[in-house]
Length: 136
Image 1 (cartoon, rainbow, N blue to C red):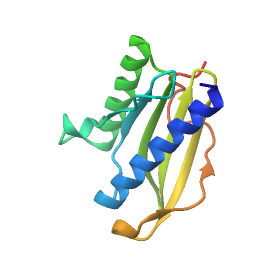
Image 2 (image 1 turned 45 degrees about the vertical axis):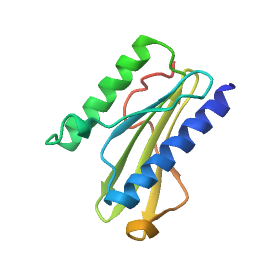
Image 3 (image 1 turned 60 degrees about the vertical axis):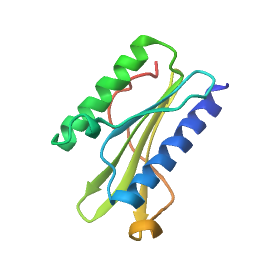
Image 4 (image 1 turned 90 degrees about the vertical axis):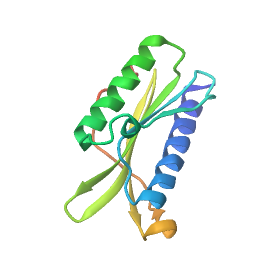
């Protein structure tokens, strides 16, 4: 799969998973996603399952550590890191996606509540949330 297609697929899967959680829980605690080099076999890692009392920072660190282990074990074509971000009165769904050749960090503003919550047009963020972890 071409790098651009892989990046797009990782972004789509990560954004949809984040939106589902946002609608269900009202927030998205940090989680990680990996795709294999063919763009298949999406795997998610939700650190909150193992660390129920962890802070946001600890969950972000656990997600990053998981991605680093996954990259180290090979067979990873794309990664994503997803979480809600708050800045004063504004909130958004932050999605960082990377392939070996490129990286992208977008913030999707959201509105509405519960199941009617929707994402607005993404804003390209300066730099990355963390890393890059996979992109060279």
